[in-house]
Amino acid sequence: MNNFKNSNRRSRFKPNGDRAFRRNGNGHKPNGDFSNGSSFKRRHPGKNNQNAAKLVEKYNDLAREALSNGDKILSENYLQHSEHFSRILIYQENLRNHNEKTLDYNTSDQIKVETENKEAEKTTTK
Image (tube, rainbow, N blue to C red):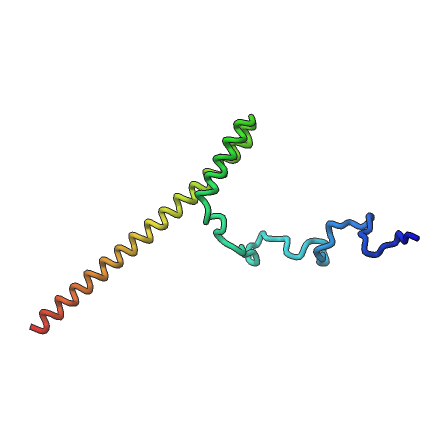
């Protein structure tokens, strides 16, 4: 004897898309509004920027493939993605160069100060 009233089965008449979240009083998702920006925080900021060189290469390859398939619009889209990540690479390189210059500048200033202090000590001890 088959019992077709299996309580473990999903009902075919219930909407299954709303199962995972609860609605608040006005019928919207509780954290669906990011317009004020105060409660929104990225979990991994800059995660995409770590492999920017690989992403440039990936999107260039995808653009080449799309163009060979005859889809010029998709190819242009991939080229725009590639350009975005190449700009990120340039920004990171400029930031790195700036940090190295300030480190070199601070190191050279520190050496000058130490040299001046040693010379001052020599003149005071004489």
